[in-house]
Every structure is written in C-alpha cells, then in structure tokens.
Image 1 (cartoon, rainbow, N blue to C red):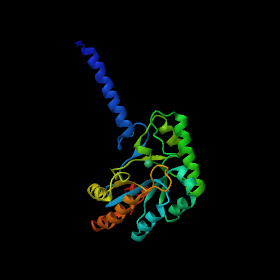
Image 2: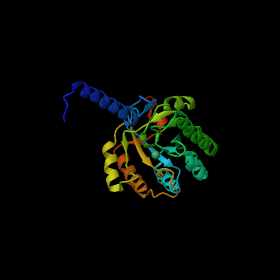
Image 3: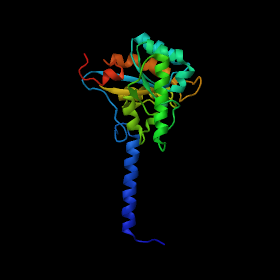
Image 4: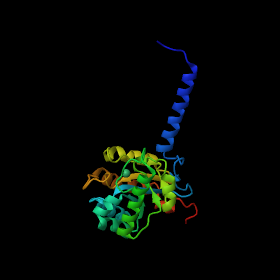
Length: 240
Ligand SMILES: [Zn+2]
C-alpha cells in the first residue's frame, strides 16, 4: 500500500539533506565544518606541494633518494605506530629537510569515534614523532580524509592545522600508468598532491606504484615550469 504523505516526504528530504551535509563535512576536501583545514596553497607561484601519508615505511628511503636527486622538498604525514617501528627512517625524513605532519597513531577512521579516542590518536602520534625526530608537527592529515566531531578541539589543543588535497593519487590501488596522467592533469599553482610512502600501518608495504609515479612525474612537472614546496611554504602567498 502506498500512502500519500507529503509531510513524511518532507521529513525524508530534511534527513537526506542532513546526511548530505554531514557527508560533505566529513569527507569533502574543501570542507572545514568539523575542523580547520586547508586544501590548496597559494596561486601566486607555479608551485606544487607533494605530500606523502602512511609512512615511514621500509621503502621510504628509496623515495627520499628520488626526491634528493631532484632537490625536491616534500611533506610527510606520518603515523605514530610506523614511527615507533622505524624511528631511524622517520629521523632520516626530517634530516633530509622535509616537513613532518601528524597522520594519527594507528590510522583509524575517525568517524563515529569518541572525542577521547580522537584526542588519544593525535596525542600519541605527536609524541612518537617528536621523540623520534625532534620535530613537533604543525599539520594534521585525517586518515581517509575523514573528519569527525571533537577533531576541532584536539587540533586546537596541539596547534595543528588540517591539510587536505587538490588531487589524491590513488597510488594504493592504481598502477603508475594511471596515476601519472591524473597528477599531470591536477598540476596547477598551489596544488597539493596526496601520495603514500606507506600503506596504513602495514609492515614492508609494496609502494612501487608510488615510487614509479614520483620518478616519472617530477621531471615532467619541472619541464612545465613547476617547482615544489613544503606545506608551510605553499600556504604562504608572499614567500619569495
Ligand atoms: Zn593514510
């Protein structure tokens, strides 16, 4: 039996709109509804910020070597658990002059988690990163880009700004032949690319697609006149 009930439809509409807004707030790269974040840098320079999440991993030194060959700085959003597994690699990232951000301790989804849980995840990562590298992160990237209630207060407590992206590489599931054109297509002044030098908190993850992509894409972007900046720098419109 079908009941004609416009008031129910109306309620459904509000519920759908509410769910849509929540999905936007939680997942959308430019949303700042649940916590302060940036998703792109200044358009005043032909610069791109390369960011790498989920490290450090056993293969991060290979990535560092590729970046060093081109003199390219990057930003690494590290997980506390990975840093404790590979503190020397975490230190190597910092020593090479790259920026280090917080990507939680164990890489959980933050949605439907308590404020205490979120606070503990960020706190443990801050602590492990600082202990291993001497660096206290100022930027935070939410695992899977998922933000939740309570994140705002925790970010404030640790003085962390959220960083999303203009282009996500999908390097955990795509081969480099698909990722390279995706990144070239997303190349623009102030772009923030999200790649991965680990795979969540897996031991010895296979990041060949990421390494191949970076090897291929750096010379191409440089030919197009782009240079690379750390997140801190790309957010600053007046940096010379
Ligand atoms: Zn991640």
